[in-house]
Length: 212
Image: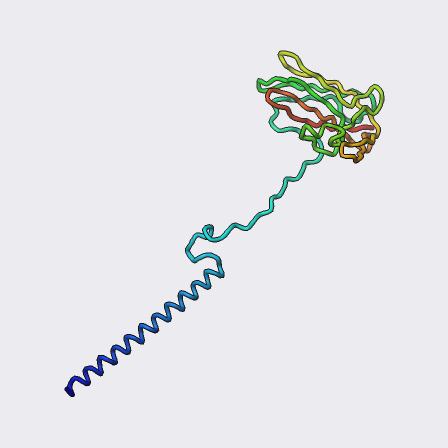
């Protein structure tokens, strides 16, 4: 009986050591897990995981492209344009335009307007004087033009336009109730805006004009 006591004492000591190690291991694992949870909460994503699954991309502000200034030409039009002298003009001078279809296309017609020279006219609505206020609504002087329209005929080849320019200043009302002023003279260059019509669409070309 006395021989068993040391043996049982040894077993009891071993058991205490095993329990102690298990408790320490459990606490360590729990502490590590808690620390990991805190880290995940702080960073919003678990290390080694896919950040796209747990976070959203930061919103970005769309940047609008700058509106070009001055005469504009629609890219890739199936039309080519040749123009007579456009510099040193005086009231009553004629600017001759020839619009020719290219790449097997056809020319259905041309609309020409005298407009401010410092704007890019790239849309149909911009050519309406009282809507956009960019083109003159009436001629500057008798015998000059504010608008010339030429409709072509079959076989829809080149179109010729003769536009008599004027000089001066006009103030007129817009549809929204505001007023605008357009001036074409030696210190205010203008432009002849051409709306070129062809199969399945149309495009624009601005021709710079200077006066003396």
